[in-house]
Image (cartoon, rainbow, N blue to C red; front, side, top):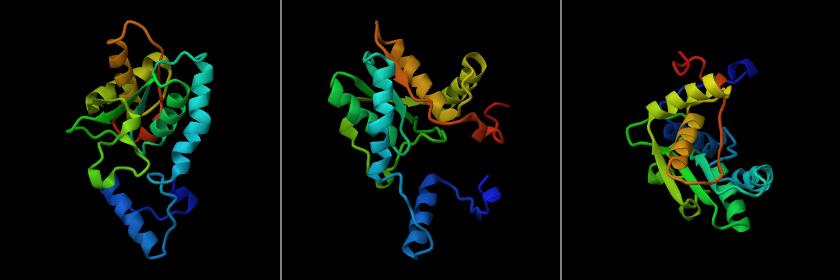
Length: 189
């Protein structure tokens, strides 16, 4: 897709390598980085839009918010909003297990932790395996008509695990990616 718009594409090994590469290019004046990992506009967008929309659409009854943690903008912005409105709303992050690789969800090494991330804004973190995220992404497509990727599958899996622990509550999870980005992978194969 990027090549269709005229971009030169350089494939690299990991998101950490990509971030270093982009920083080096920017330092040489060859690129400008909006830096979703440090830009406060990332979480502010969710504070101003996503959080209020969920609050309204759940008739102010949300008890738990589950979000994958990539750039952490979604979980940081929504956490800020929900905790101001009702501090008892539980904020649950989702990250891959140590051995898993799930596109869009990270278990960040300390030196790459997004600068916008504030761990005290997350009440709990649920680890999800690559297999769980993959199976749930497939299930979301087949049974719910939600064509999403593995990071959404991971968040849904964490939300279901959480729901099984509760007697009652209103849990919202974020479907944070699109399935069409995975058509060249074996996700739906």
